[in-house]
Length: 260
Image 1 (cartoon, one colour):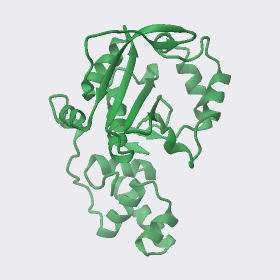
Image 2 (cartoon, one colour):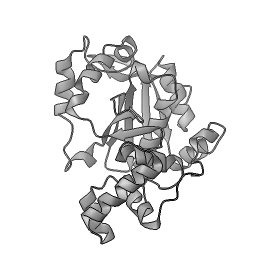
Image 3 (cartoon, one colour):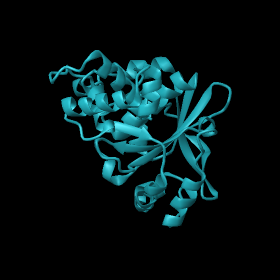
Image 4 (cartoon, helix red, strand yellow):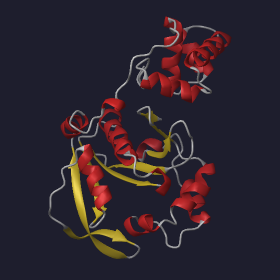
């Protein structure tokens, strides 16, 4: 899972089917992606059934986009490695999640992980000519997109469409993330609530990695029951209702990182 404190990218789940089916009936998604038209729930179920299991996930990393603290499916983003240092990225965002910069956030998270987690040297983005929203998002994240239109580059439902193409390297992403688009509200703030102990911070770090109580206990050399007690204390101090919400608060307040 990946998060910037506002979005959480998690694995797709079977219970995402209803929201996927609803979103993919949107005219914008029909126009700018390759989803079937008309789109039905069976298409969502079939797509979810083809998602990679844990063993093969690395061959085609795929996430559902959610807007914290809600766990509702609000889009997809996936990476398609070519095995030689290149990765293609594709994404779509549900209508109810648009207008808040979430596409750029998801794209930053996925591309950043492509460079760090996959060791990618370059990420490639494509969009059909006319998809101005996607073009603006790609450029905001740092993709270099020439003005040239590539004739017939894209395929859609048996036809060809003129397309834009852009590339991103680590330096481009770093420059864009640190530029004028980086808002103060995106950065971790200082935590002013009840102090977490050193052990609680360690446990929070394990939660940020997605570890279970048992895994955290083994890693820290303490009992599982002790971890449970620490988690309970963390939730109380951070006024969080769940482990996921505690991680989000920790990320926002600079108490932990996704690599803690």
